[in-house]
Length: 336
Ligand SMILES: Cc1cc2nc3c(=O)[nH]c(=O)nc-3n(C[C@H](O)[C@H](O)[C@H](O)COP(=O)(O)O)c2cc1C
Image (cartoon, rainbow, N blue to C red; front, side, top):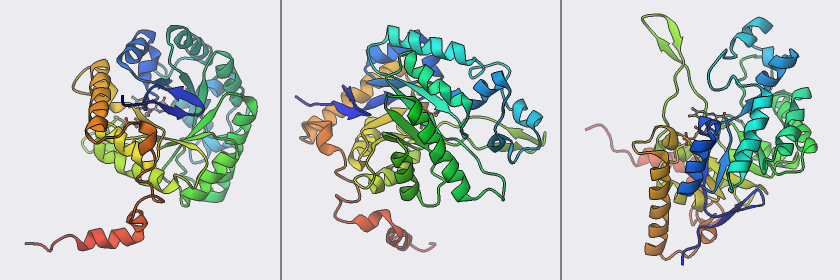
């Protein structure tokens, strides 16, 4: 019998396929369907620092740095739509999901600065969440803000959130960090039990006719997998944390690659939201394919493959580094 079970943040999961933070968790009915189809845990959509602060009208200076004014920063908050619900509703949704589901529910906070808003970490725990994911989504636009200052602020935020809770904490990181291994270690030393790689930054486009910024979400593809795949491979065994891979998981082989890099779970959003078939059907197909692939390749458990292709395990560790860049460039033939 093939054993698909894994552990993540101290939670025992029946398989490594986790629903990533997305609006799906706004519907208890949809979340239940994902559970029935086989996902092993669900990460909720985020409660944003801005949503909490909006209520108390205390905005930390990090939020307004790089924007013209407090009023402008506030104007980014949507008036309606899926992220407009207030903190109380969010806590009710945590409790509602916990009541309806048997799989672990991971709450999600999204913020950048220390402050009173982090008390919601404890409230999410009290509402029943099995773990908390903290998403550090920040775009530094101020030339006066140094990498060190920003990293210190994020490390302090992680420590503050950790000190408020007793449930496990995962931190969702940006790939745009100068020295990621060092930063990852600092985040873990500050209290993170898991690292979620990576935040997918939504890039604005230009409408050349209207001269306006276009805000739309692009669906990820399996090609997006390569960035987190490389970094989990590099960090596995060096950083003492459970890794979750998010960005670009669309098929069974993407999950298998994530496991071999060293991830404990693979998280999926785009495929569930916009895939060609319904999300529950897709989950069943992917889990079925994982099982079949493992049987064909004589793997008896997921745990057996975790980290087997990480940098410390492969025959060619330089494949993840600069040397490989030259090799890849050399492999291209000249123009015909
Ligand atoms: C519509 C949508 C909403 C999302 N909302 C959140 C969110 O509230 N919090 C969060 O941490 N990530 C959020 N994400 C990011 C996803 O959890 C995931 O990390 C990202 O989409 C990359 O995974 P994918 O390639 O499977 O889509 C959202 C993604 C999408 C597409």
